[in-house]
Image: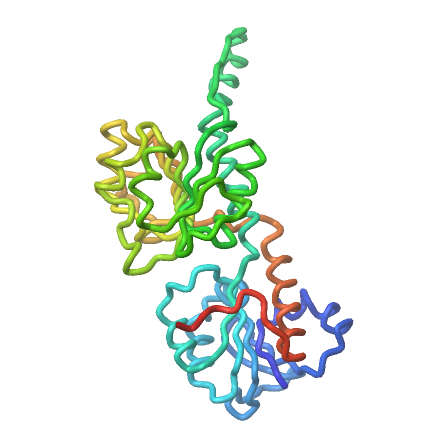
Length: 324
């Protein structure tokens, strides 16, 4: 069997592939979308590969659209490993409707969870005030809020939400989790579903949006959401920009009902220069980069290698997406 992958990704994992010694051939796609085997041009439809690895390299090269076309037009591809955690791109629905198995990524969960903790801590800890006192050579007391005993509401309790919960719990925070099932988990003090939000919001000091962007969650953080939210809470969005009603958030910030918003994702990306978010001191803006820890790519490589071996051996795949 053959698998299609980016030439740079192949170079990263080549030694590991040789160690695995699997009966697999590799078709390499370059930054221009050309596909080769052993340096020779290949017609993918004739080569009939059974797998495709959507690595970050393809996104950086700007060939994702072409690679999606390759998958959905293929009559041979049976499995696709993607670097994405969220699959709200409608093209994934095309892939799943073609009966192709999709495994998504959990590789970015560690990086994103560290991003969340770092930004929340930067609000709780008076580091800027301490640096200012140092510059002024002033011996000042700088009181601060502790994460200990704070309540975190994590909406979306998948790989990323659980990674955030694990790290917040290390600070003795109380965790409220929201997901499709209210099945208990040791990572949360309470678990509920979306219907429990009205009772959870007034308790939360920190709200983390980590859920998929769907019709149900479009504008989830709306006027009613902020009206129910505990005053002076911190909002963090590391999921999708469409989860937030921007006008409602800006109004809540203006009223002082929300202490601060930490936003890594936006409805329009790149964030337009005219966006009011840029100039607000109560908003932390980053360029959809919370995933960009130095361990994300190596973890993604390991996930692909594990799933490749499982696919070849007919074993259950890690993070296989339910096509329903």
